[in-house]
Length: 155
Image (cartoon, rainbow, N blue to C red):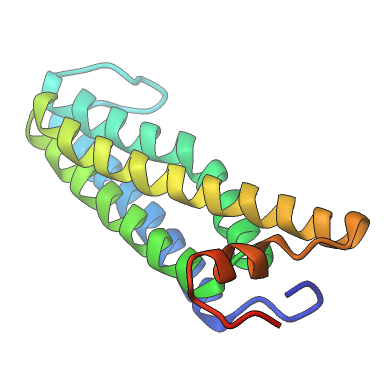
């Protein structure tokens, strides 16, 4: 609910995200040294470029991830936000290592993490819409949906 502090679990998910980002960056530094690619160069052997692109791609999507994780946690469900957030991060970890091995190896984890990201976006959007309809129209859509699905008794 609005006004409640963001769950410790959502905060811990953000910490996992930060550690994963640092891990990816360290892998790029290691690949630079291994393949003798000095900054600011971003091209080199294919092995280096895959590590560099995997890290860059993950970094490009992390702002959307953090924003949707936060919105889903605040407006819909902290538990579901954490679950899908951790699954997203796990998918990104697999994506990174799949991409390092081969360009084709990134695809399955990419599709998985994209599905988790879309779940967070959907939860955030639904939560915002439900909050706004309750605040401005007096309609508790989440309660109504729960009742229609048989998850709660009618009150």
